[in-house]
Image (cartoon, rainbow, N blue to C red; front, side):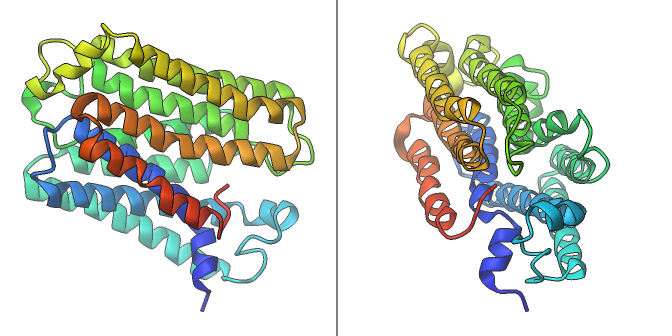
Length: 315
């Protein structure tokens, strides 16, 4: 039987909290409160299971490369068999998809089902046939895009959430940021990453941050009353200043890796950039609901991330 640490490493469990924060940001952006908390909990469960499945299946598909480049990972080191990891990964993927189907059936809407299935398919495409292609970063960004939309999937159809540019801008901003992050991380295990790829990844991450900062400008009177703070903050200087600051910290954590592209610096920048997703989600939620209680609750996800991240690797 594999140890708990082995399972945590295989699933990159510290990172699963970023998937949770994404789906909660999507939910709270399109809901006034957590009155329907069972539905929100099922969406979180679906997101967490699908994310963890993607991490496990990533190692299943990459076992040959990991044996050569990352022999200490759970499968190449023999701490868990390939067959057991395969069963675990597919079981998690099915569990996450079924959770999305269940919430759709219970709430009488097809959207959670469609998005959960789309997310599962995209995860398999990324881990499998597209991992070694130029499309890989885009497909990974699409996974995050669907994950945010999963949180929005129970919004009332009267709000036209799937067509409203602001909602899609938020989901797309997260997705674009992750496209850049994936591009940045593609050669993290090599002796020296290419500076052009790292620079390109950083610039795409900054584009995602810029879109997240711009998204509230797309708010209009068709949104419900509780979302009106999004329209109001575009008239203040604090919101754009905050996202400029987020961009500065992104540059600050990635430039050292570009200047000296060693695995240690690149992996550190990747880890910190993954953690930053939680801060972005908390900022978005705070813009709608204020810092208490939801914004603070999302920021609090950083604590288990940091604790688990000091115990197991997250890249």
